[in-house]
Length: 208
Length: 216
Image (cartoon, rainbow over all chains, first blue to last red; front, side, top):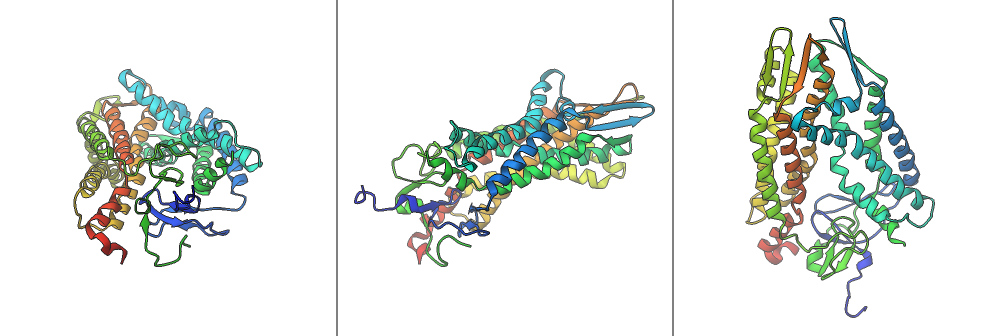
């Protein structure tokens, strides 16, 4: 096939944003490969990134479950108290046509982030342990990447801050344990996302 | 660090006669239908991209109108029931002295969505004709739109938290209004619209207009 196809496909990398083609050279430790034309980060390898991501993913999975179940915020005014969990907040839109919105909110702040860490674990654990990729790992990673913009835990966290300031002159608000878990969760989700080198994952899934 | 050396002329995959996967960056010969690594359908340029961008953009815009006309929040206190639209609620907050919060809400729910509609429309128009705005600026604009689009959901989350938390029997209760549904739909459709845009087109037009000059 060499005469028919003179371009060495395996040694090329193409920027997904602007279609610029480069000769592939793996960046060393601490380096990252950027597209010269539009600046998109193409490869960002980190030593032991696999294990770190697995550790962070496990922590995120546990925190999501815990933060969902425990009370999140408590409000006190005139002798009445009301305490809610994150699930309650997500399901606040519960009358009539707003049910669809309740389900969407629950998905955006709880189920999508949870699904993403579980998929990441499913894909990365065999790869990091030098086993052949799990069955359907390609589909799993694809789904995880497709869900990426829809994971909105960090936006919910800022939303909390705004809501609390709005309420604070109306009533006393106290933080439950879940609030702090959620705060930690947001940091970990961001860390996990920035550690992950997508190119390396796809590369490792190739070796089947 | 860069992959190739500095000042090397940049060629696109299309110039080289290959087709690249936009998801996993793997390169394939022209004519390959789907990426052999990640399975994504391969297209040199997504020709239907602009149609989808405009369709989703229009749906997003249509949802944004009722999102501003219907009440976003209904506040019931001992004496009165008050319904606030997005802008009305922000003005109300400003009267109470919470200027900072009012500004956050105005920026997140009015300025950003409107700017997003304009930015997507501008990008979609700019790839069909010569544009005076440089490719770099347009690529940056696209990335900002993609990044910031999700943050408009913040208003929905604020409504969700407020209306689940402020349920104090007879004393006070906050309930979501109909606008919340439309607002969420508007955000979702503009996000989909931005995702449908094939940003490689930004860089193509330049090559078409400057011809060979680009590679000098």
